[in-house]
Length: 629
Ligand code: WTA
Image 1 (cartoon, protein in one colour):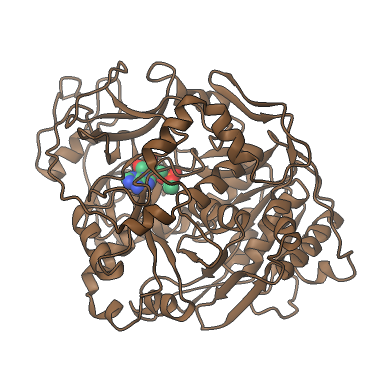
Image 2 (cartoon, protein in one colour):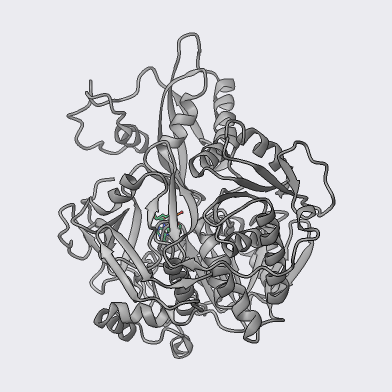
């Protein structure tokens, strides 16, 4: 998409009940923002002091463009902040996790129980030889042990790299290889939409030719002893037998890496986004407390999977660092029926609900009769993340789920930012279609390619102008890819999204400006899908574009030229679709594949996806002077 366009900004404004502002931890937005601007380091130091530090920092930040260090010299442990702190300070018997499985099974963990479970598993990992700084790959179904494994890694200073368990073997392999993971933690099976997914065999495929992997820890999904298939495998619970129940938290430097999380890039290889310990947890804690406004009696439910950044920051680290009760579930929104999520809100009295626009649009389509069957009156705040929340979806979400009273937090942020960056803080007027304003702590703007601010109503590129604690520290094994974020427009962080501001500074995020698709809220590089397609023997070349989709926001369409000896057929379409599914995972499956004799290219041989897209959507392709013919 080009960055020059005009947007008509006539949004209806929704005014929240004044009680939200009165009771919010953040208080008046303008005042909080002015306080931040008058002393940015003081602002962040005050937020950081709400956490437990083994040794306080000497300096809040050191900024050597494009590299930042936060809370320099400070020492802490994130698992101690999420667990020990609460066990000591009156939340020992408070529920930390409520888990609801797809088959209706329930499990609960108090803070004390979670603390003990984490220490035991952390000791088991140590027995396997895991040391501070080692990378551990998690490829797990969403059961409580997923959270336990994350916290156990950070307790001993190991760096987790979580791979969403819907990814296929190739995607898992490349992530294990890039991170040089020493251990892979998985389960025998996962359960999704009533079907068993054989996670263990996917892992077995993925670890071939991965010399770094020493052991595979296998959790039995049904918690029964399991048969081990190879010498590499060990049983998740068997390795905990006889280990010490005490595991003091490892002292971590504020800048020690906390985790790696892979996200799609504009090339075929995903980027390993590295987050640090101190800065990340300050960002996750601050936004959980002051943006989500999590209070002592809240029941917080974020419907993401821990495999995405949303799960890292707003299921695990943020909410647990503030001592919240967190609902976790392995349910999908429409299985066994589209009432399942609303039934869980009623059953557990969920007060803060955080989901994605793609789910909201699915619910709009199936009808209001589903949420109407349930009592949603416990809800206090509802949120959205992952892609633009279009005004129709906003209106529906506000009226049907929020019952015309719950404010909507449409939060804009990224894997790279680690924490919420732009939203409409509680108590502020909400404008459908607009995510909102930069939160206190964040300096953002919409500018042209040269960095000049664009006037209200005119589209431009979204940039962040100042470092923030939860910013990524590097791209694993690839620092130049990190620098690229900071050297496109002046010396600011270019987020890769197009946006527009209104007269009051509200920001509407329109979509990506690069070759990244957001399919059902998940990032997908066109290059990733293309390289999966060309790995198939029938395919000579492939080009992938995003096309509008009512439910998913964007769907994948592929254009393919075939090698000699292959002819287009419906069977081949199915075969290629299946191939992409197995290589990357179901989210990358093309919804349409078109065979072509030739792809449009520039004279220098670059595929012009823009031309394919214009043809597909029946719009003007713009400047095609570089087109080969
Ligand atoms: C998009 C997810 C509009 C955006 C936390 C961003 C959004 C990318 C919103 C990051 C929102 C996320 N409104 N667009 N509220 N939230 N996006 O890394 O394009 O999976 O750059 O992080 O999702 O996706 P990621």
